[in-house]
Amino acid sequence: MTTLLVVAKEPRPGRVKTRLTPPFTPREAAALAEAALADTLEVVARTPAHRRVLFLDGEPGPWLPPGFEVLRQCPGGLDERLAAAFAHCTGPALLIGMDTPQVTPELLTVDFADCDAYFGPAEDGGFWALGLADPDPALLLGVPMSTSHTGAVQRARLAGLRVRDLPPLRDVDTARDAELVAEEAPRGRFAAELKRLTAAAR
Image (cartoon, rainbow, N blue to C red; front, side):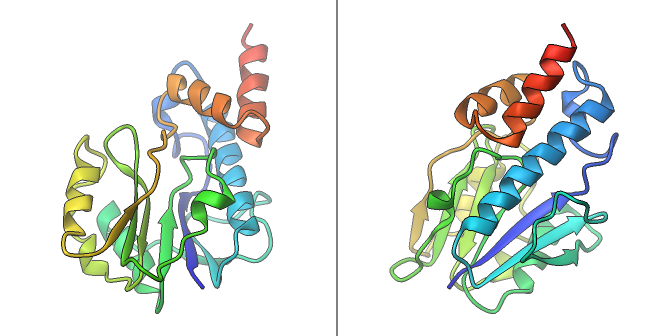
């Protein structure tokens, strides 16, 4: 069975979702990040898995449900940190971030029986999910992160592997992203927090 990896930052003001400021304050942006992380972890907790691992930059909080191993992110660039996450796995693993609270257990239930990798492109040109039957960290090292072509470079790294593509999802980076993602998952904590903050601003 697959190991599910979530890479995240502790949702502290000024450290997460800085592109949401403005229109949101750093504290409000952190509240949205916490809601997105809580939604993501809740979905992972409901998805069948061999292990559930949170690779965290910071300290865990009340938003962390039971059943997760918590490992600290290593120093270095994002490519190095993602590679390190896979290095902790000895079997099939699927890695996601904290930026897609609209994710579902159905999307995360993957089967490597007839493929070597899963790739989930993000609408901003990155990727929201990467699954590897043989978690080789070298497949991520050197990939330029947080660019409009990150996804294309990472997908090219999988050349020669049997790859299944997952549906594209939108990362929450901007206020407009937040609105669209909340519409996709209207019953989650993220949508509720966005609604609360939007109402308070009126």
